[in-house]
Image (cartoon, rainbow, N blue to C red; front, side, top):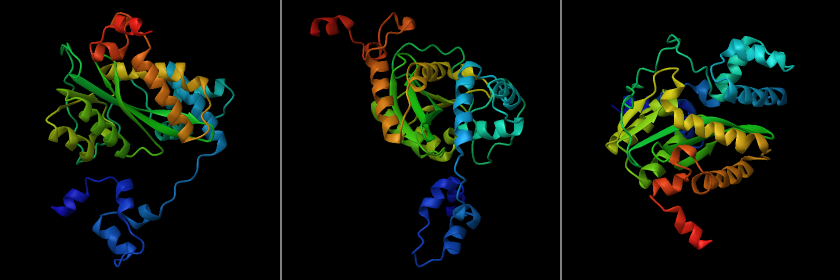
Length: 292
């Protein structure tokens, strides 16, 4: 039972459990955690400055053409003066956590311990805040490097409930954002894509324990999670592409301020030119007029 439980934990999390000065050797600890020693000792190669520039260009291309796979991405990069082959483009896309959002055959087998859940929102009427939450992950460029951003949004009001930054694509930062979101409200349904961060037991168990129904997008169907995709587009064009973040702290401060303005000040045509905060908490904008 313990062995089976350990198998549900990601390799990055297992590495944090290893204690070099413990009475048990590294080899023994790896064996207990079902973690190959090579994985524990592995040090990922730093991203080159050239690849960082390419990834930043790819991010802009992907925002405009999310249906580009590695082949078209390679062609688009070459038109911009970057000689990048299809395989290398695919490697960088995987590192960024992006893929072409078009219907496609299942090219990889899912992890045997990661259950895929059906999409529950087709034809589902969303009539109030805190009824349906949704989450996704995107890539954010820095001056020297990059980070990943996850955000949880309320479908009815477009209100950004919680968010986290991370330098790695493990599930920890997604779970932290989820716990904060569930402290805010208790949705009927929580929708994500089929990414490993959302299908892992650490993430789905939190939802199960909270009695929240789990919904997952159909593979390659970006419109299943359309409101988060629109949030990323707004964030990228209104903030990220206009700003050069020096480091993670700088990025955190800027995105925190952007989400504050997004929730409290940015008017949404689909919300009757109200802000997400006004809709989410059923506030009257006239109150703010009197206060000014």
